[in-house]
Length: 592
Image 1 (cartoon, helix red, strand yellow):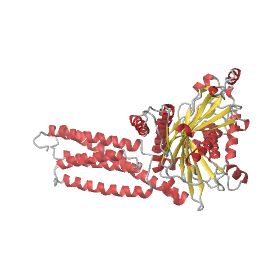
Image 2 (tube, rainbow, N blue to C red):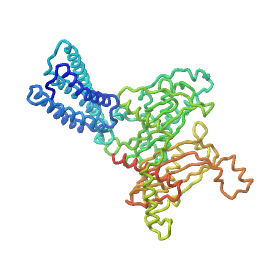
Image 3 (cartoon, rainbow, N blue to C red):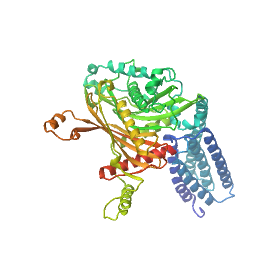
Image 4 (cartoon, one colour):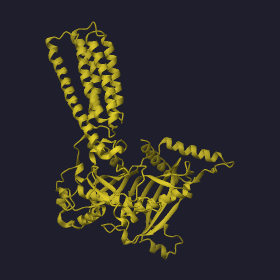
């Protein structure tokens, strides 16, 4: 293959053959060490993967040794390198390849290619002009291989020790709830020692001590806010259902389980508390704020519930911390746990809240927050994903061609059932979307206000969830269970005394799953007198202002095939496509 060339030309030819493979290998190494996958299989799976990998690498080394001794042609080595590189590119994009496994692959790959370099350059007559380049090239990659091999050993030992510790802490449920590596590092599973009521009261006291006039505008702009680590804001609290009978009654649902609406209120309190801890001096709410600020909930990215019943007489542990910080916004990740009959810790829920920092004197102005610094690749991955989510906020995306075809095919099917042109006909297993509307109206009383004098966001989420649950229950005519909440938006604050409207629709169904959208609006107090003077016949729909949007995924427990919902108007078509996206994403997460 390389015969008939001068040594100089032979070196150039072989270098051009090897160089692209080395560039690809550098990319693989960079990807596996800088941005590892957030998903990590259990210990047994990792050991099995590493065992298989070591066997494959052993075969590779045997092949290289054979080539070195000229038992096989160099052409075979080239083919082998190309196939190995393709395999490495595939595994680099596999989300189930663990960080340790990727490091092991990179370390052995560099050593493998170093030996292959010797195979390529072995037949070349090394002249004085070539000896320095050859030795430098080999030394560089042998040094890289030793460094990555050290990374392999250290990361593997850390991973095994962490897995063993968590195994003892969480019992037999460990593989089910602690697969993601970054969750193992970010969160503690020690028993909580503070009650949730203490968390709420400490937040109120911290905000009450705020002095908005203590900083000038120039000081607010110029003060240096040191970045915090992710575990700086970590907090955990307990809802004492096992000892507090009043709490049991407060959280007990009509079905004998725990009211999820009350849990949502606690999650909102917790998200605000954690955000204030992140921006306080010394990491404690006993200390003052680093800058005067008001922190409010902007949206809820997602709340996922595991298929585990929440027992009404066992303590619930809630923990969380800030996992991303922008200029004036933060993402707070929260989790819920509860012990089962065997005292094993069950993971009940995971939530991601988006919080924003505002000026107490002018709510339209933002106030800077402390940034975050990552200490491990897992924390870097968590922050990177949150940053990507922030970048996509506010851009829901236009319908795709595939979604246009879904709507087109649906209406072709409906119109095709009729003998009259352009008249849609539903079957017995279908229902128009606008027929699924269910509404409720509330008067906002002071008992629902937060520390800023506005209506508490947790109350809004609880009322929306209860309405969505009722709508889904009536729609499928049976019991339903909440599985996920997505894209909860807080567009405008709700004031005391406002007339608050909740309107719910079933936007999409798939088998036993139901997607419900709830829109909240208020009646503008300034427009109502004008309508009254005109003696307008409506109930003030023209004076409504949208404040919140909620999306819920429900699962029918009794009906495996609920009615298919069909949009009749364009505005409902957009809701249908949005509900389809949300439900499909939820089903993917449930399957995974």
